[in-house]
Structures are given as structure tokens and as C-alpha cells.
Length: 510
Image 1 (tube, helix red, strand yellow):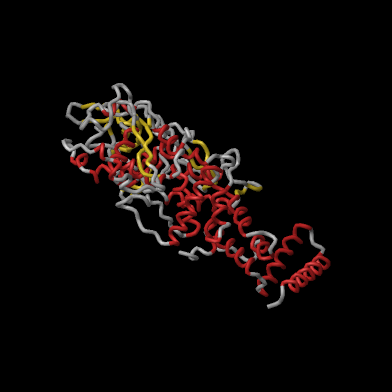
Image 2 (spheres, helix red, strand yellow):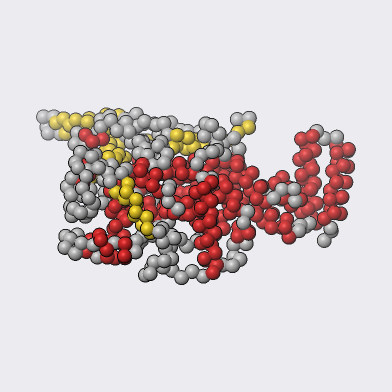
């Protein structure tokens, strides 16, 4: 192998000769310089252990961020190989291609949006979609109700993470406190959309069902009242911006006065949690609940998994002794093991007591419901009642939206915070350590492939036994979570992981 000093002399000679013979412009010469350096380094394989690691760091992050293999003629690769740029800094330059400007878009030049930036955005969208228990809400509806996708974007929960990730100076905590919805910014939207009904494409023609009339022969006709819809943006994904669409229910069916004048794109506060898509995907009981037999437990269970990385049972047996009611008519309230889950799920679900759907109809040829959720989180028209003292409460949905955030943290701390609304739930979650440790765990796995265990290790009955390697990964993630809580920057979190030895040698010590 030729020594590095000899190669530098050779490269310098090539550049000097090329510059004299071709009399290049400064821009063209700079490109040729990178090409020559890359060619020589590639031919002679001149790398040190340090530069080899930095090249590996760059190649790995490029594959994760862009979903492509970086070429050795890429200026970033050449600079890292030459030792003039660290792999971490090169990775962050690639990441920064996804940065959003004041309009919520990535950068563009001469009217062309940065192609690497679009790939970076799409890669992180895919990653954040993957962290949710329910990635698509379509499974909640019959196959003939897919038209909801034309009005409500299933990716909106992920957009809230992306907005915190790529919007400069956006605190990460806003992911759960943002009071407005988000939409994708697309390069080429289409006014006319189609959707598939049992494999047949139809033009979306959503209407409201009007009054019925009956003619002399007894035939019933239902008036169709067209609905002017502002659709979910489509086209090339180039950014994220605040949601501005208003799709107001102006003529609901006569039996559905609840939906009148409601915006089916309404956001209910608390960032991710308050999106229509998150409500749709994590609820299968539209309508008021009683707080006993029926409750929005699926929503609570998925929220704890998605945002806190807490699995069930989420409480120790000693935590729920006071909640056990031997004489209860509800079987789950009689058992300690049952209440280890229900004391978390049912209490949290008290913050959304009345989730309903706005019913509209597509057309006279296909009058199936199109479901859009609207919400009343406890109307407060009835007085508060200690929950869950009542077995079955017909007025549960009419009482204030009171609940609690109740679980054991990864470090064994008992969290038991009263919550008065959906927005208040988001505020309480961002004060916890678990939200940040959970996010760090997701990124750590995405970037290193290592899934850190965040179980309650002090639980006398359910604590896992971790190897030295798994304990090391756990401690790294917890430390990263603490940094994220303090710095409020997902970018710095990513940089910390990429710059670590674990990023390029994930198997060491595991």
C-alpha cells in the first residue's frame, strides 16, 4: 500500500497539471479536484483505522437517511476519506437537507427541491410511522369506507415528530403540546382523487344524506347534498406545515345532529394525541362510554406503548390493592392482576369520554357511511364523580374529562398525576422521563439496530434479567433520554448516537 504522504503528493501533482492544461473555471476545477482525490484514494485504498471508521460511519448513515449507497465520488465521502471532515459532520450535513424553512418546505434551487432532502424526509417519515402500534386506521373501517383517507391523513401523528425534528428551534416537547394539526406539503397536488372500493376505482363524490321523499308508488328517494371537500395533499413530499383545511359537516343525517357544523379535520390539542388519525386508529367504540364495561382502553394501551414504551402490566401488584373491589359487579375489578392493567388504562381513558363519528354518504349508488371522528372529551354538564367508584355510569360521558397518568416508570418511580383534559395529558407526559427515554429508544434502535429494554427492573414479579450488554444499551438510552429532555433537540439526539462507537460497532459488548 502506498503511504498517505506519497498519495497526497501524487494528488497535488495531478491537480496542478490538470489546472494548467485545462484552464478550468473555479467551479469546474473544484469538481475535478474532488474527482481526482477520490480516484486516487479509491485506487490505492489509502485509509487509516480512524478514517476507515469515519467512512463506515458515513456510509451507514447515508444508507439510513437516503436509502441508497453513497458513491465514492461523492464530495462528502472524499472529504471523510481524506480526513478533512468527520463522518459525524458529514452525516449531519446529509440530515440537514431535510431542514424546513419558514414555509415548512425543504430547500430548493432554481425551482427544484433538493432530491436528497426529499429522500431524507421520506426516510424519517417511514421511521416515525413504524413506531405506532396502529400505522393505518383503514383497518378500523369496512373496505367500502376508504374514502376517509381522502380527507384525513393517516400520517399526521408522524408529522408531529417530523415537525419537531426538522423545524429549526422547535422544542421536542411541542410534539405533545402543539395546539394545531399538521399537513404534508406536496409539490404537485391533484384536485381530482380516486379511491378503491372492493377493487373498483371510483371518483370521490361524498354527499350528505338529505330528506327522504316518497312518491305515490311508495318508492323512497333520498336527497343528495354535495359536499365540497379540501382533500389530503398528494404528490412529492417536500415539507410539513400547519393544517389549514376546514371540512365542515353542513348537512348531517337527521339523526346525527351531533355532527352539524363540525370540522372533520379538527385538532384537539396535545400534538400527536389530538390528531383525527390517532383517534381513529386507536378507537373502535365510537359513541359515549360508561366507564365500566365500555371505555377507550385500546387508545390508552397504544398511547402508553407509542409514547412511553410502557407495556402491560404497567403497575406492580402493591400499587393497585386499594383499587380492588371484591364485591364489584365488574369481574376485572375483583382481581389484583387485572387491576395492574386497568388502573392505568381506565384512568387515562377518562380524558376522552365521548368520541363520536360524523356520518356522511358517498353517493346514491353507494350510500355507505364514511366515518370521520369528532370528539367531546367530557361535556362537564354533570358533576364530577370519583372514578372508578361507579360500576356503570350512564352519564359518564357528560361528566368532566378527569383521569390520571398512572404507571411505573423504567426506574421504578410510581407516576400518578391527575389529568383534567386531553391537552393536560400531553403536558403531564412531557414532564416525565419516560417520554424522552422512549424516543431515545426508538432512535437508538433505528440507528444501531439495538432494542434497549426499559422495563421496571425493581418489579419483584415481572422484572427481566438483563445481560451486561443489554444493561449497557439500557443505560445508554436512559442517558440519551435525559439529554433529550434537557436539550429538547432531536437533531442533537441523532448526532449523539451517530458519533458513538456503538453506531459503527453495534455488536461490541452485546
